[in-house]
Image 1: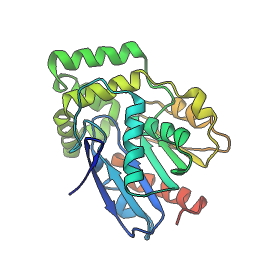
Image 2: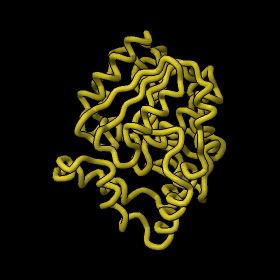
Image 3: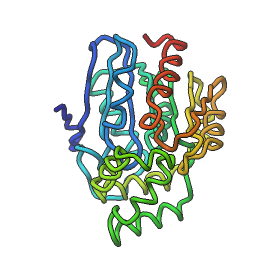
Image 4: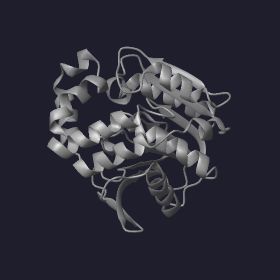
Amino acid sequence: MLVADLEGLCTHYTDAGPQNGPAIVFANSLGTDLRLWDKIVPQLPAGLRVIRYDKRGHGLTSATPAPYSMGTLVGDLEKLLDHLQIKDCLLVGLSIGGMIAQGLAVKRMDLVRALVLSNTGAKIGTREMWQQRVDAIAAGGIAPMADAVMERWFSKAFRDTDEMQAWRTMLVRTDAGGYAGCSAAIAGTDFYTPTSGLRLPTLGIAGSEDGSTPPDLVRETVGLIPGSKFELIRGVGHLPCVEAPQEFARILNAFIAEVGHV
């Protein structure tokens, strides 16, 4: 187990592959931990240095008192990459991880050479919607909303599988304060203007059945960045890396080859 003390935040991460290889960094969605990428990592090209981490309040990383700001979450990843002496990574972010990725690319151009923005947006939902979720967590925890979240995360076909139950358990076991804190960070974020200033290779990936970040939102967000590409994976929801790992990896690996990150 690898844990870095980053100015008082004990951050859990994995660091696999050659230390001198091109770095690819994965940032997770709300309510998941770094296992989100378990099906993707084995399909990556050989020679990459693969970094995964649990964001604040998720997985095995410390949960500090809520609420959090997006700047804090961006700063957490910035500190981790500085700690690992990583520059020019290919940064893959899903949902809130995609927002963190946008924020880090704007703040530290030296850290990010290319972006993959999966099932995310420059702005996700409304402040009022996220406040309702925070209030619901305060009143009853995460479990009462878990079934509704699964409907947004996964296609109907996947919701009928045993594997879906494991993802539901991961969600329910997420620290309530960490989930609420990250919800507040999403509520306060509008990256339309800063993201439109980015000039780096960018790929957007969406799921046709995504109830959290619909394809049009993902397309609109990556469309802010000149020269970006967009891919739609049909028949899957908010977590295509879970539902369609082969297709997700095929799209990701094609982008890795295209930008020369091997």
